[in-house]
Length: 424
Image 1 (cartoon, rainbow, N blue to C red):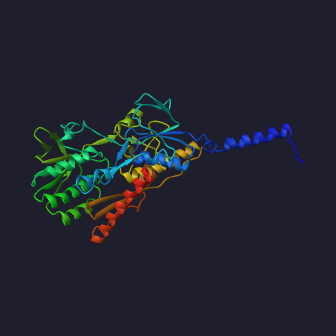
Image 2 (cartoon, rainbow, N blue to C red):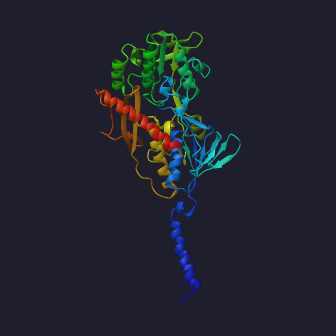
Image 3 (cartoon, rainbow, N blue to C red):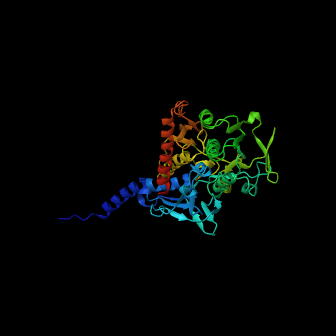
């Protein structure tokens, strides 16, 4: 015999169930929250995927106007003629299948108080939390004589794409005996070892194709990432081909003159055949629109969650963030994106985010088959991301050729793995 519940029993059960449901995170009720991610590079794309993986019920929209992402890691091989640009390019075809909505527009307006953004086509997106992966913008006002027009003759090649090919083409058409000048900026900037890897691979090209030519690095610093490893590689591979001029010896570029094709420091003026000017940088413009960038041009964040310190409910990941000791790299951007995604998922579910530990490994090629690296582990400390004592290190200084070759292969494997994971 089936017993019919009394009205009082039914209401008691309903009240009990209601109390239970109120205690269950929203993600278990199919209303897990609306997340908008601006920027489809390593940081933004990784964060969007990680959020969907952590909780498929979260509504994730990726705002990215470009149909193709061009990666910067390994782009120095393109500059040196060792790789084609198409090998650096990745589409967003797999994102819809992962349940991520693609908004193929640029973000034009951000209203933090109303929690919505306006897109270039006039449409609007509401969010519960916004994640900004703004990348970098070049500071065209930072170096006298250097602007966007000048960059068409003196390329920066610090954003993947047409500039990368422009620098490669200039090297290929340069006469043997021509001087190549690389201007390296002061910290912070995207990819700290990038200018020195570039000098190495350009020297490899010159050694084989234009042996009477030379590379000079004019540096706004007195020290750089993996310095001992690079200097040893240059001595072994390119004796006399690369000259590094540090800040203390007059290396800081103070002006360029396109008409005269000169690059000037406090002590000297150079007339290169090819000038690669890497200017100072700041967070991408969308960070300024959102009100999350401070006077430095970068974005201070809470290292536990990557929430912006200047605006609630907005998180910043990747190159745009002030991440303490953690460098601005693709590996770091991917790691930060995953930590941010886990924190956002926890916050939406009413849980406290876990204390994160983040890993970064940065690989560089001094020549084909000659790889070096630096690694570190980072955790929140005194409001910043600090390196865990004793956790980091670089490749051994006097390693044999087999070790350098193995690191080069590991670097290639890392690039294949991360691009497959992020872009499919």
